[in-house]
Length: 186
View 1 (cartoon, one colour):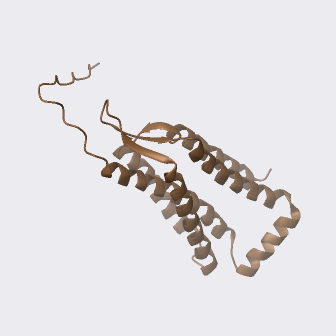
View 2: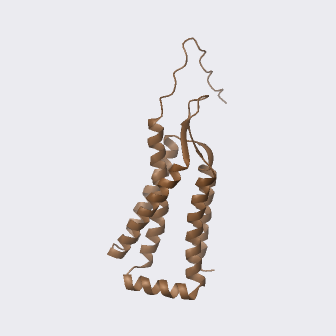
View 3: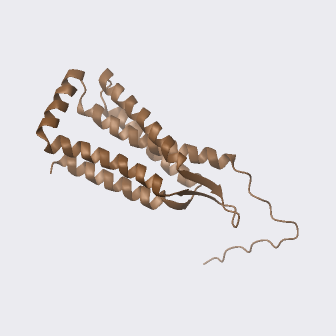
């Protein structure tokens, strides 16, 4: 197995773990989660920009990655709910099987593409010739995949923020209702 394939599998595994642990099921959503996600997306956009030669084919691949990531982000958000829980007035997201299936399909397609490049000579040769004809280099391919994934994450994070801000404000405690006791310290 090549270093590129090993790295691709590691990245796909890490993304799947992040999706499973932070997005699938019910999770709190707030400024910290929003900030961490957007900082990560911003850093990888910046890093990709600085690592990629700004040729027309590379920029085209990057823009295509952003476009496809946006479409997938829209599909992801159609399968996710953002709501305020009545019992504690906190904001949560809930994503289920459809959300997970979309992420799995994207990660499996990426892995299958890289596997075919590495293990299927005819595909690798045709794709290599196509890259040469298009004057596309490996930075452009990397930019496509990174920006597609980060656009999916960024779109999801921004859509969660917008949905959160559109929710009805947290209900004020009823008059005469006892205040919640402060959490014990220690």
